[in-house]
Image (cartoon, rainbow, N blue to C red):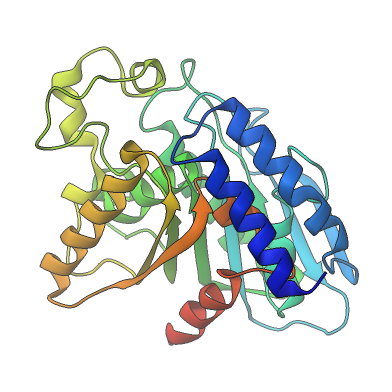
Length: 303
């Protein structure tokens, strides 16, 4: 089957799932992309697994390093998975999902890092953003011995991982007076406010209470897109066609906030034929429509 035919087959399968996201869609998307990732190139890498960046058992990361060349000051890309604040794993299908993301960057001469974080309801806001910061600090302190550049750290967050990456990137009360310490952030289908700023009748979901707490009046202060300042690092915002509304409007709101702050359009990409998770699942496979743009964004951020 040609790449074009494969792309059409996958897009049709996603279209049939529709603009919804639930456990059935997640399972079906994994089943759709796992065979593609099995065929994807991923040799020639050394993976340093289960490195601790904090004391909690969830504060762990894996470092993917290419073997083919001796790296010196290579860019570093840290990926954070989704899971609705209450679930998720950095390797739910080991070697394939979501190891495909750091594998992709390592295959292109960078250091790929796959990180996870503490979960609600035991760990509430801003634990996710704080864990992103702790992982960034670990990378700054340790990545040179793998050939990485501690001054060229980029974040990629998907879904809840994008929420946590945005919280660290934009909110000074979280990252502190010295800034987030990153070169850029690539945010895929995150939720950048707990509730729609205009539609107060929107019914919250239980995972929102689990992470943001029971006091809904306090939620608005936790919205990353309300904390954007002109000194923020470069940002790339990505969204997909077949996502529920509650995953779609936050990306539009974030783009609007960035444009109002910067007076110019930020990097952004709309992925036709993709759902909430396929955007990340496709990276590094033969029909990857996002990975090359992520590389272009990194290249656009000058040291």
